[in-house]
Amino acid sequence: MAAYAMWGLFPLYWPLLKPAGAVEILAHRMVWSLITVVAVLAVRRYWSWIKEIVRQPRKLALLALAALIITVNWGTYIYAVNTGHVVEAALGYFINPLVSVLFGVVLLRERLRPLQWTAVGFGALAVIVLTTNYGRLPYLALVLAFSFGLYGLIKKQANVGAAESLTVETLLLLVPAVAYIGFLEAAGQGTFVDLGPWHVVLMVGAGVITAVPLLCFTASAIRVPLSTIGLLQYIAPVLQFLCGVLIAKETMPPSRWIGFSIVWLALAIFTYDSLRAARAARISRSARPLDHVVT
Image (cartoon, rainbow, N blue to C red):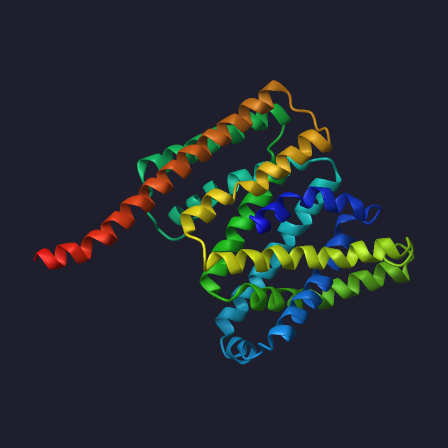
C-alpha cells in the first residue's frame, strides 16, 4: 500500500521542481536513483550479484533495453504532470493492466479467457471515446501504458531483483545523464545550484522517491498474494486521477467521464475474472492431495 500510495502521489512532487524542465529532472532522477540504490546495497553488503550479472550478457542486454524504455516512461510522466496532463497520465496507468494482457497474447502467445477479451475490448472502446473527446489520440496515456507494460515484460524475462536491476539500469544511463546535467550547467541553463538549497534537496529527493516505493513493492511481492497486489495496483492511478481533478483542477467534461467510466468497467471485469481464476486455481491445488489420498 505504501508503494502504490507513493506512486499515486508523484503528481504532487514533480511540479515542485519547476522551473527545471522534464529532461533535466529526468537526468537528476537517474543520477540520484543510482546513488540511493547503491547506498541501500552498501547497507545490505550485497555485491555478489554483480559477478553473476556480468557473466550473463543476455541479462545485461535485457536490462539495457529496460533502461531505455523506463527512460521514455519516466520522461513522459514528468512531462505530462508538469504540463497539466495529470488525468491523462493516470489514464495510462489505468490502461496498463489491459496492455500487459495484450502483450501476453501478442508476444507470449497466451490464450485469453472470454472475460479478459471483453475487458480488452472495453479498453479499446474507451481509447476511441477519449480520442473523440481530446480531439487526438491520448498519446501520453498510451506511451505510459505501453512503455511500462513492455518494461514489466522485459524485467520478467531478465528476472533480476529490484535494487540490483535499478542499479544496472541507472548505471547504464549515468554517463548521458551526467553529460546532460553538465551541459546545462555550463550553458547557464541548469537549475540545480541556482535556486537555493531547497531546490537541491528536492532534486536529490527525486532519486529517493524513485527507489523507496520500488523497494517497498519488491519487499511486499514476496509476502503478499498476487491477487491482492493486483487489486492494490489501482491505488496509484486512482490517487493520480484525484490529484489531477481535485488539486490540479483539470477539466473533466461529460464525454471524458464517459471514457474513464468505460476504462473502470473494463478494469472491474478484468479484476473479477482474475480473482475468479485465482480462486479456481487455489481450489484445484487444495484438491490434489485429497484426490491422491482417496485414490
